[in-house]
Image 1 (tube, rainbow, N blue to C red):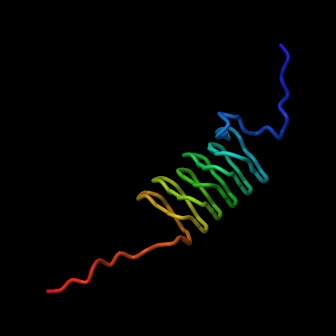
Image 2: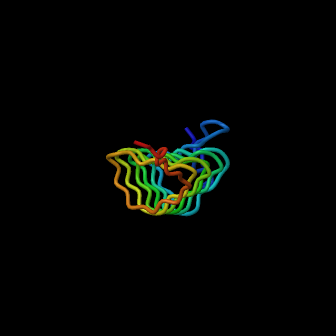
Image 3: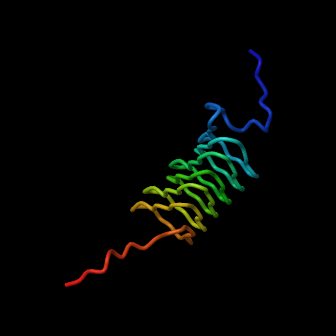
Length: 130
């Protein structure tokens, strides 16, 4: 039975035209970019830039900066993240860097050391008269 050689550029298995997965046994060193979404289950040492949503799954790690439409982190991110949409840091995640997004949520049980850059409004309530 003959083996099939896969070009080194083909690092992600296409799930659909909308997103790709970097599998749990995959280790990538260098820049990663693409159209659509990306779920990272393995290890990336380098910058990541995708046009769609990104997810760093439990047990996965990214050491580098990340740019995406939105981001959900359950694994580890050591670097800055910039999104046009929301960033969600889930319980069990480890995040260190600057987060810049339209909305940022950090769940209890996550470990973070971050600088946040997001627009916000303070709701101090209406002045009450007695």
